[in-house]
Image (cartoon, rainbow, N blue to C red; front, side, top):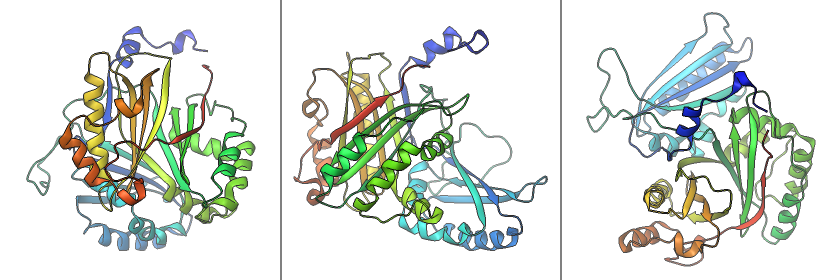
Length: 372
C-alpha cells in the first residue's frame, strides 16, 4: 500500500506511462563502476591482481581508460571505474569466457562486488581522450523508464531430461515478492526451447538485492537442487565459487527494451530464441532492436512491450503481444533486406531451419506477483 508521503505525483505517473525505450545501441560512451569489498589483509594481493588484469584489459577493443580508487575511510573498500567507447564492446568482453578466466585471480581476495553501467549524458572539465573514431559521443537526452529492471538467466539441460526439468521448474512455490522496503519481485517468466532454459525476471528496485533474496528462499533452493542432476554444466550450490561461475555464465542481460506506451493487461507473452553465428550475437540483437522500435511506433502497435536479452551468441526476445495475434506473422521481418540479414546472422544448424524468422520457445510458467 502506498502512503500519502510515498504517493507518486500524477505528473510522474503520466511520464512513466509514455513510450519507454532503453537500449545499449545508441552509440553513447559508457562508464562502468565496480564497487569492491576486499578481505581484510588482502589489499596488496588485490592490487597486484588488478594490475595484471589492467594490463590485459588495456588491449580490449573499445576500452578507453580505467581508474582504481581506495576508500579513505575503509581500506577494504575499493572503486574501479572504466570508460568505453560504447556499451557493445564492453558487453562483448564482460560476457566472454576470456573475462571469466581473466578475473579469476581476484576471487580469493574479494568478499563482494557490485557492477554498475552508465551511458554518459553530460561532462565538464578539460578535454578527454578521443575515441577511435575521433568523436566524443554523449547520450543526447535522459531516458524515461517504467520503473522495472529486467534480467534473465539461461542454461542447458541434458538431452532427454527436458520434460522432467519442465515439470520441476513449473511446480515451485513462488517466493515472497517483497524483498525490502524499496525492492519487489514483479514477474517471473520461464521458457524452454529444446534443452535450453530461459528464466526472465522483472524487478522493481534493486536487482542484486532481489537475486540474493530469491537465492535464499528454501522453495527456490529446493528447485535448484532438484534440477542439478540434469544440468549440462555441473555446479555445487554449497561451493560459492562453483555457484558464482555457473551464474556468471548463465547471466543473460537485457540490451534493449521498448514499451509502446499503452497499458494493456490482456497481453500475451511470447519468447523467441535466436542462436547467432559465432561473434554475431550483438549485431543480431541490434537488428531486432531496430525492428521493435519501428513496431512500437506503428499505429495500434501490436507489440506492447519487447525486451531483447543477449549474451555471446545467444539472443532471446521476450514480447507482449495483443491477444489473438499470431506471433509468427507479427514478429517476422517484413523488410526483405532485414530478413536476409537476420538469416545470415543466425546459426542455421543450432536454429533448426536455415532462414527461419522465428523460433518460438515453449512457455513453462509465467507468474506475476499481486500488487502491493
